[in-house]
Length: 189
Image (cartoon, rainbow, N blue to C red; front, side, top):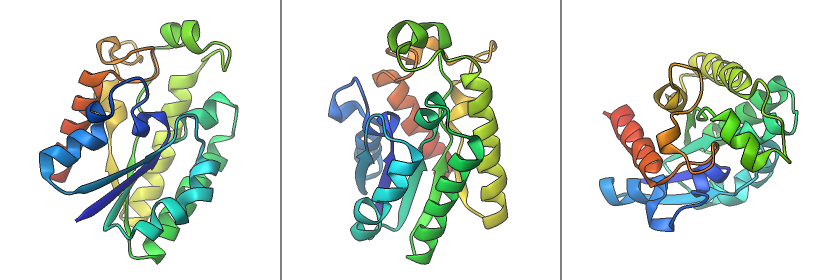
């Protein structure tokens, strides 16, 4: 089996060693070919534009699609983000690749604002992520597309990310990447 993971910095493994990224840990744990096509800062538009070269030409059996947070930070409409992600899923299905959506993780807003405030004020980011994830879930149910729910597994009682898993309020540390791997493995059972 071959799996390609397309996304942004959360897929890439921003801020940690390559061998600690969830894609590499997953590859080591289950012994399949896992190709990481995450690009830090990428948006759903960028992912859609590189889907053919980065995913389809690699001829995977499955592809994990995870993105949208950068779109939200730049103010893109949730409907447009969902449309881009849906287009990716349709293109994958047309090319006999099984799409699976990974729901983006919540943000530790105060911490993220200190580190990344030049990009966004992070107001309502977690509420908007929840709306985006709800849209992805609704779309996926209609087309029998798999979901990996990272969001619910990283949110705390205050509606923020569980701080112990983050390096800067947005990106995950090694423990957070290991938790993502465990969530994927659990969803495959």
